[in-house]
Image: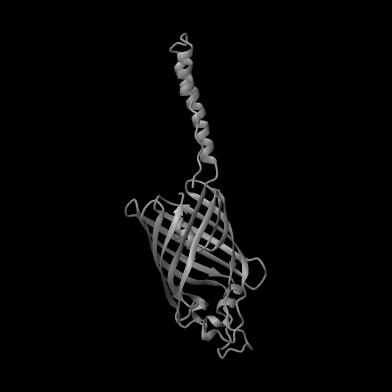
Length: 297
């Protein structure tokens, strides 16, 4: 688990002007006529506002992230990158990069690039489904991986749930599955997070979580098949807990549209993932900073 978060309005035609016009044209309209017109106006206005609130809203964010992270889970090399970060939301549907969701203010919950939809939502509970492309891994990611079978790219489906215990504390869980049968297996995560609103413009989020995988998932990412071209000894991991992590994220709104994001995370491999011959450095850290323009939350 990982840390583990535009409006279009239409003018309303007020009936007050019609009521006043009726008063000037018809002198016999008494005092009883005005409250009736005002009541009609309130009813129409409330109904229109209710319909407007229920209408889907379009939001988007576009920016860039500079980051540094391990070259692979368990590796001792570094991978530095400059990547675009964007998100598009329409009602309960979202298409985004992993950091794009952060710019939209979705906190430290599980973030994966792809398409997602909110299936159910209340004041404290949410349930969502998502599809994303898992790019996998090949021998070019690090010298130690040369001679090992590649982790093939695939399409993963994910179900996630979140619950806000209080206005600041929240928990979440999710499970994803390789739906193309390309040996990606199943992976799950749990998380707990705390959000501290420092000011109206700045909030700090703290999170911690754990990640799990079945035998197929761990075999692909941490296993060494017998008979491979790798000089490493054969190793076949079992499924279970493979990583715990913790992180902090700071987001500041420079103005109505521009936001700055900074994040740091540390993770530690567990169980068979830590005992794998592929694991050179079981503790890894990543840092990132980004800037984005968002509209129209």
